[in-house]
Length: 538
Ligand code: NAI
Image 1 (tube, rainbow, N blue to C red):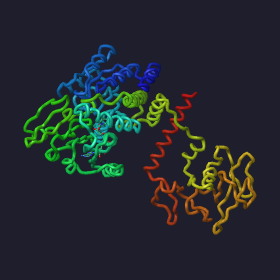
Image 2 (spheres, protein in one colour):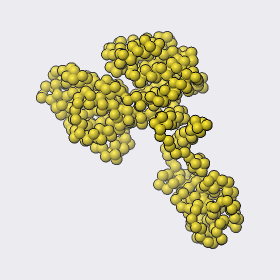
Image 3 (tube, rainbow, N blue to C red):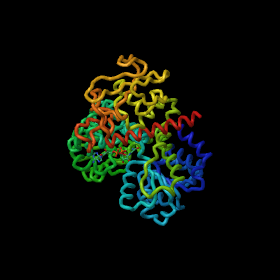
Image 4 (cartoon, protein in one colour):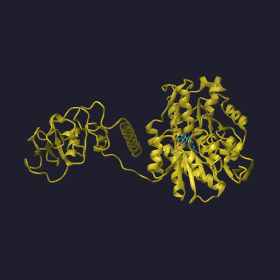
């Protein structure tokens, strides 16, 4: 876990949690032990409860208590009452900060341990289900402190949801059943980060994959990636293996189970054991044979069919396998630890509510993971950076577009100041770029300025275009000699969309809101990555 090992050294020096008590509710695994050690290296006193009684590894819990001075309240297989009692015990000393995985600790604080709330300065939530619950609490005004949605970063969702759950859920199914997935029909419910990971990987193993969804965009995504998309009612009689990853309840319900084939395998990769209606399955069954293999219960439906339920409908990758591989949790916990350290220094500035992880934390974590793997990436040139930051720049498809780019920035493509060449004005000798100017209205010609005599075609190389009044380029003026309008700048044709309020006849395209947001996030991430790179290089 190179990211966490690196952070351990950093936190040991910076001590971001000096004097703070942190209560955590996490799956108690070896990777979580690293997280606890990291928090302690940063100066925290840590108390820990399990976020799922079936995923608790007792040897890890014991080692954390005995060797690493952590107050651990967890035991594998405890019942519901024991589970919540452990959470209350982990909270008992009054935490300054909390880390949750699924929302049960925060929920307990706000329901059964409310006296402790005034002392809590903030927290982090690790998974989608927990973030959804927190947002509901915040919307109802029930949340008492700021929480960082550590789950909701692009890097974490990709690495943990898609790669981690995608692989480890299948690992859990295979360990429990030893079934051959090639040729089988596998139904994946939910095509979010986790469901997509499962669907793609199980297809890679040769399965025929059906996806069920309730979100039309996600369903379209699945369909365009070549998956068969069906309602669960239609998928139920076809599937041989079912995997739920929705964060929702009763996704596989009685009416589905009553249609299933003999030998159908049911597994859940979602956070809570509500996605498969286990009680309905019990009601349908005439007999239940527990642990026919480890983590496999056989439900005899009394008509010659048996349905196999894995891990009691709990999160299969953590119960029947070992959860995410260390590489996955290295990034996931690394982001969460960085976010918590940032939170510790900013709790007085943050409003109560659910906050995103700052973009530079996501970028920094991804960069450190890449660096640890020996992977380097490109860096923006100054011109590329300026291009991304400018709204004036249109198509670069032609040499003239290059000119517009340079013109809008007042520099050439190497980033050197080039001035605004006036008709008849020569460019400086060290500037090979040429200037051409859009012809006046009605004309089609272009005048060339710079290295070539007037009227002579340039011999390649980027050109600097001049248009009247330095107007941003838009399609309506492209080489046709039309006067440029003021107003929205062109985007890249095909990327943007027409915006409301554009004047009739304007064919310029601008980035729509979602694209602008993505564009902004990309720029921010790239900028941060470069800053961190230069800091590290320095
Ligand atoms: P997500 O929100 O990105 O995706 C969930 C998808 O399920 C959405 O596209 C939603 O439209 C769909 N969905 C909701 N109700 C549905 C229904 N009745 N039928 C079909 N589709 C339905 O969530 P993400 O991040 O993929 O997580 C899904 C669940 O997995 C959550 O409970 C999350 O906490 C859990 N999770 C589990 C992990 C593990 O290690 N097993 C790791 C990461 C997340």
